[in-house]
Length: 209
Image (tube, rainbow, N blue to C red; front, side, top):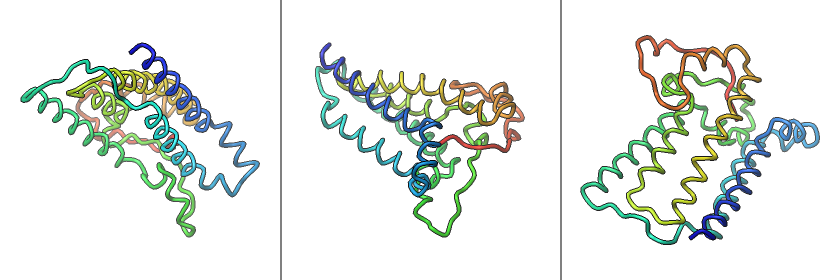
């Protein structure tokens, strides 16, 4: 069990490094300077590499192993309902993005110019700054059945989201300056805060890749 945890952690760390390096502004600027044609579809290539590399990781190191716990009905139904709610809120937050731009599909439309990046502060982003990270974490923690491999992936993914959010916010502050700093003052990072007047929270800006 310990060896499996280490293997998955090392494998996921390699995936996380590749994912983070490719998302770095410096790498994107380098590609834009050296291979302008590729830069237009950089987001799509980035998405494909991320999906394929994560798929290979799971294929090589499947989330199997010793059963740690298994909840039974009706408790397991409650946990599944929580997961469904988390998935719904994830998709709801994703809807607030330009999905085509977010996944890189816009580059396939030759007649459509590149859309300027936007800072999303509407929808669920009025209540917390990382609703998709929150939904993903809740979904992972609400597993009604857990084995050692699943636990290793769950802990690594949550850690990656926490660390990633720190670097993401630093980049957003650098990109948007005072606009994002003000947004941080008004909206909590993960735990949603509901208060009167949040429906009016809208600021122009750019959206992270």
